[in-house]
Image (cartoon, rainbow, N blue to C red; front, side, top):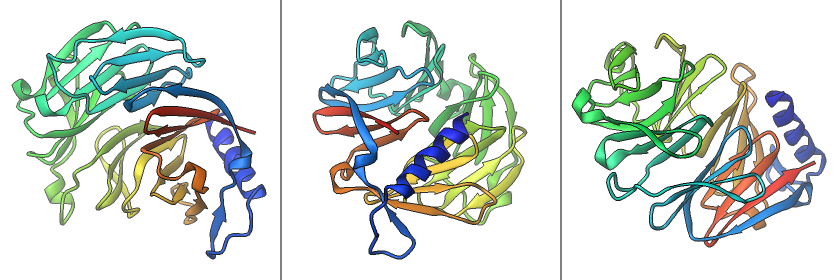
Length: 277
């Protein structure tokens, strides 16, 4: 279902494309999208779960959960204790992960944004963790940059499993900005080195040298990312990187998120939700 929705979106984009001046780059027409919702506010970040609920962070650091129609569902205010939220993982709507990178802390929330647990990574000898991600078994992936290992930890912070030392695998080790667990693979994305693919046992599978992307996403077996002007789509093994030029009206977004039903754009002063036909 997820894969077919993504394919349908990009087929539509191709069908509605105007003639692009750059060879091999399709022109993404904004006429293929319909605005569904505009949320006014000075938001600094957001994410979307698989139920269409929005999680938005304002300039004071407050995290608010909104329904698909923008109605307020829950609020998490206890930000002064932990500092700035670096990343929100809502892969499992029943277990929201907040990564406070500067404080080396992961806070686990329930679906009402009540704090269930907090993990002091430094107490677990994890002193340099740049990114985290929800794991397939509801534990947590972290990349330990000091030991150069991908680790899976429990809610108590203890290491359940770990990969081999990346320094033995690669000439230079990555510093991933994103960790995504999807379709029986773990993706680590470093904008300066590309995407690294591992299985659930930490065994290295592949490296894809797509550089300089922001908003790295994986839906099913489809890798998505963008730069300021181009939206990229790639299916590992296909050897076919598809590029779609983002229309001027959608460029300069601070963040773009694609789901099987909608596209979300964060701009200064508002968050926009578009459906695509």
